[in-house]
Image (tube, rainbow, N blue to C red; front, side, top):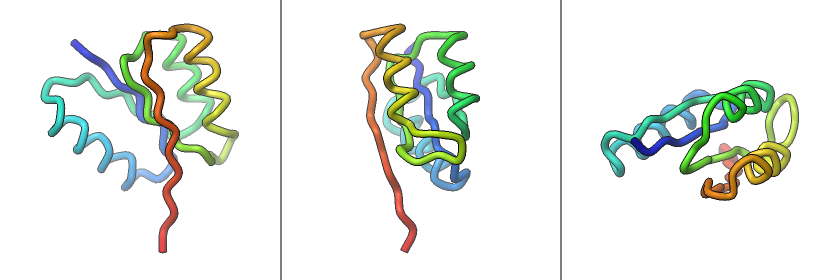
Amino acid sequence: MKSALILEDHSDVRLWMVSMLQKAFGDLHVVQASTVEQAMKKIQQEPFDLALIDYQLPDGCGVDVIREIVRMSSQTYNLLCDCHYF
């Protein structure tokens, strides 16, 4: 089964991303994190096929998470996102 990591600190945006991925890909295993610390723990536990990473997070920068994912697995597709509310 394919898997994805979503790192987004705003819960409404994160849940929307989960919903869209599951609608698009069906039986996709989606793991959620809201902080850099949580995401770092999760990428140590399992590999992911896709990572959707927020840029600005309360405890750091999403770029650092992507660097760690790339270091561990060059097979993961990484997408860096930044959402602003108007």
